[in-house]
Length: 103
Image (cartoon, rainbow, N blue to C red):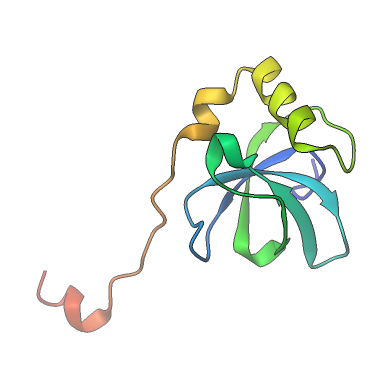
């Protein structure tokens, strides 16, 4: 099972969209992919993203390479992942060592 593949559901782990789920729509090269939420569902608009900024999950939907947002949304509904995609994941923020000694 390749981790980075078209249709793989991921969590954004960096940036202002951190914690939101998205779907890989296209693979540009070994470092970048095109992802979409779609924006109506998760708030992640279609954009290029570094693979270091996403974390692949076990879920995968059946879409074609380069599928538009309406096709991705339809595939999410068919897979029954609509509520799963709306949930946000709280990103793990490391506690600074100085602060950890006071906890």
